[in-house]
Length: 179
Image 1: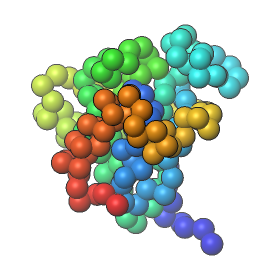
Image 2 (image 1 turned 180 degrees about the vertical axis):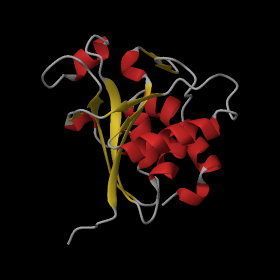
Image 3 (image 1 turned 90 degrees about the horizontal axis):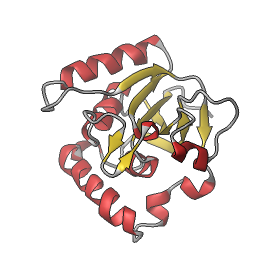
Image 4 (image 1 turned 90 degrees about the vertical axis):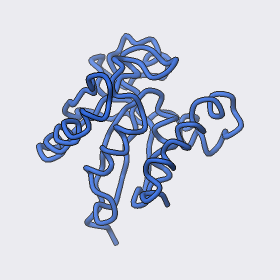
């Protein structure tokens, strides 16, 4: 039996391990897959190629969610408020176009909702929002070692230093949306 309410969203906000960990906590989210999108180099890129910043791809996640439980707009609000959408090509110590803030829309409705949410949130931040809104062309799934990274490695240094505080912020801002 298939759920007719399932939709997908593809977003990037720096390291995909961080973004994946956030959305795995959200009610209505069925699946989160780390990957890459938005590049110009033909063929499936490797993690090493992505990290070079030369392919044009961004580290992203593909979120499968039940739209009867959480809307695309709510997904985008959570996305925008759990990273810094005002820093160009950077999140914390991660720097380069592969770490840009980006929403890859799949249809006109997602594009319009993304623009509306950004407009509504523009007054929340001290600086201008620089989140890119682009059409999704191809999503490449990252290797297994990048899937469920935080869940599988909660004691790893990066997880403790970067992801755990991000999840604390999520709990403060969006407690009503958590599983």
